[in-house]
Length: 300
Image (cartoon, rainbow, N blue to C red; front, side, top):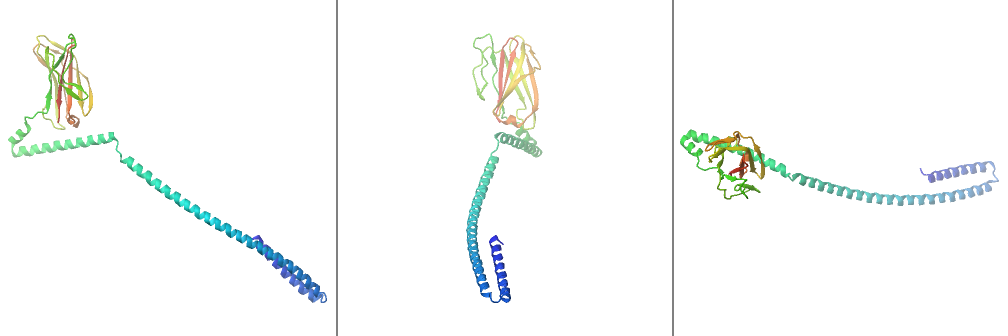
């Protein structure tokens, strides 16, 4: 109950008490009833006037409360609409961010992609090698001669270049021929005063993935005096990469008109050997500073 309503209730209670007082006064005084009635009327008029004013104030307060309530309702509805719009925009932005993250996640790292491709390529080649072995076994069981003809194919995978010679005592001399420049091989004319052949042998000629192979570097001395080697370097170029370095010499001295294996190594054929063209360049440095060079290349 509001304060104005409490005041109206108190005035009404006071009016009832005045009526009670009037009745008691009429019964006791008698002749003074007219005066009492006048007083009661006067007080009643004052109370009525006060009640009217209070009622008017209550109506004004109620109207103001109604106006304020309506304004608050409209403001609350507006805020609710704004909140709904903000939620909708936030949901839309979150969806856009999730879509952007999905697109970013879908972009593959080139390094990871290359590694995955290499792993898949290696698995595929191992599978093909296994299938080839199974096929050869089946052919051999059916006809051994047919299997022998299939294995001993005249087609060669490897191609050996020509030995090139550099004499530091000759002005403008240099190793020319199979020189790697931006993964391209350029052929040139070898110098005529070549004292030896530098041979690169890779066996077997046809090797499948997973099979073992043997690489040999042989020096054939064509001169009439012994040759002494001081260093041997192997440089590989495959799959767009270049690597290499010096290797230890198994034999450093080769007598006149003799040949010897300077270096040999064995390994297992991997998918990296199939990423052609592959070029192996061998450079041999002799005691007096001469250099011999040759290259072995293959393309699968």
